[in-house]
Length: 262
Image 1 (cartoon, rainbow, N blue to C red):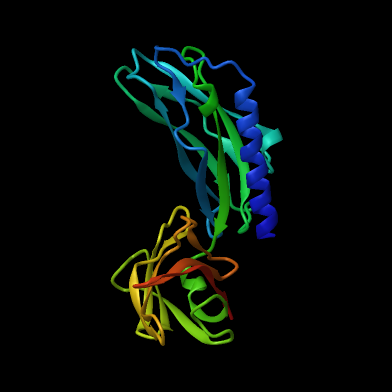
Image 2: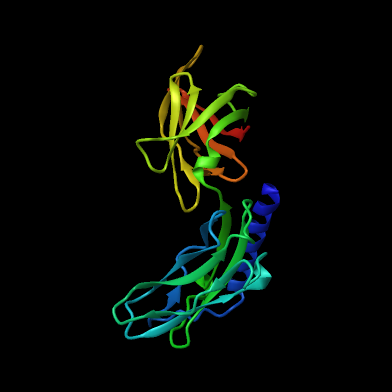
């Protein structure tokens, strides 16, 4: 399912680029409105009926007055349904001197999926031109579950450092409101990580593992060198840590350390 979702995202982003290249760029020396990012991850909790989220946009120059900015749903670039998965909450008003604003969506938990869904939007304004190659963005809508139902015992599945089948307790970090601790994963002891409560991506620290390779010496864990992100799924109870293992002489490469809740 995850591979299908990733393929869908890749296809959508490719389509957005092609569509943008076929349209004449309206960007001028005047104030233009645009999405600063190609994709915005947003979550809605399984314990909530709905959740309002902000989707930011920017202007190329400070606004010369009051202007209306709207989001238009693009169903051909989405696997969501307006009115079922989300609603657009009105339009946005930007006033003189402002360089940025937000569009608002209401996400519905009942239709959301822990594997994620895509809603694509085009930014428009009746009085401002748009930067065409930045006029479309996707919102990745993911259902999340409470952290207190996520923590517990996890089996190590695969990767480089651990032993498949070993059980590791995952607990909330009492010193970090957005922290998790994977107990006794490293030879040096626990692995503490921090997660983003919006995207549920994980930040892995650079840390000595406590393991010394017989030839190359002490091994250090670092975030993956290819820039790929670590993440967890709070409903499916899975953890994927994208990490690199290095020694003084170089690197053993990037790996995904996988855990599955029992």
